Image (cartoon, rainbow, N blue to C red; front, side, top):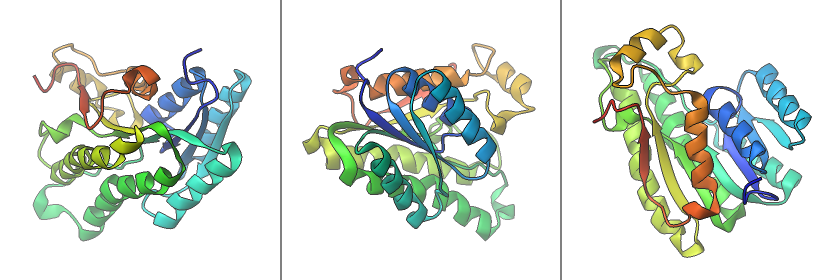
Length: 243
């Protein structure tokens, strides 16, 4: 058991992939964990059941990160259940590929709303309930510093915006001892990369993609007390792709 015993984490976008691995890891470390999901209620319920079966405490909350009122409602539900929030992880995000001549306005707005506006609003909604000395952790991408491929311009700009955002928010929250950091994974074994794992592995100097538990491990470290002197940082885990 880590120093997380008795603490509460709220993970936005926690039912699948890196989010689900993060929820599981934080629960294993001793956090009670509330997490949001959008569409896969079955996956969310399976995750709650798995954590409960291991003696943990988890709460699944349906909330769309593109909807400010749903984000605020999710925070209220977590606080009503647990009475506090010590760690917030903003993982919710979407990925669409199209070259600039083919990006529909609706797709542009959706990615900006979820990947940038939704991240900001999720943090903003949580701050009044976040304990002094708490943790804010965003999930960005290594594309913020390395263009992945043609068609990724919108996704890249949203992740670069998150990397910049955490610096300003880190200064805002520093007087309360709250740290704000950004984790930037490279290719990872998630649904988003299904069907492309072999190709992505060949691109990596380590000749593999990340396992989602490796990303969750870094998130769990940042959530610990011993990471209290790091803030405003973007930490990249991409197998050397950006070297």
